[in-house]
Image (cartoon, one colour):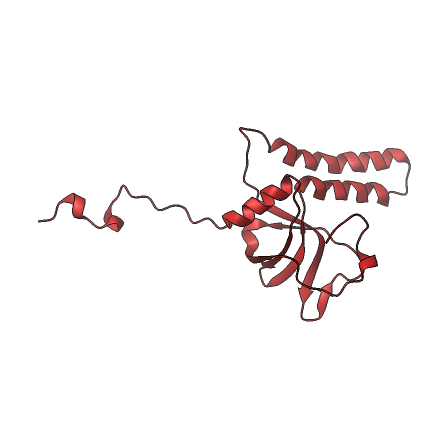
Amino acid sequence: MTSTNDAPERDNPERQEPPLDQICWFLRDLVRLANDGLGLAVTLYVEGSVITGVLMSGTDYFAYFSEQYAAASTEDDDLSDLLRKAMDCYKTVYADAKGPDLDWPPQYIHLKSACYISSRGPMPVGRDLVWRGRLSSVGGYSLGLMPVARREEDVRPGWRR
């Protein structure tokens, strides 16, 4: 007769399997660093696509859209301010997620100077792209940019690759 202490671990009802995390812990930490201001170059493999770019914070991502909405307005300053304020409210999500009791795990990843790599070459060509995707959709990644042929003058001033 075997004692209960000799039972295989898989049969032990007290043993709990850790939940299968669908997001790589290291990539999640890189996104946390980006949300704190450290932008690293990455190449992501997302559901059959390859996307390369520089990590940016969620706050900077929404600040970019705030600027773009305001700049796109050809109306008076009141409409520009309204559009900017509408986009600025999304930045608070990232500010509110910081603090000793509110260290929420990131769910989204943001890239600047982003570029899709396809069999036909990089897209877009000649302009910068910011990109946002679900971390749970990233199947793999590499640190560093995938080499793409882009002219230096096509990269937005002040943005490093």
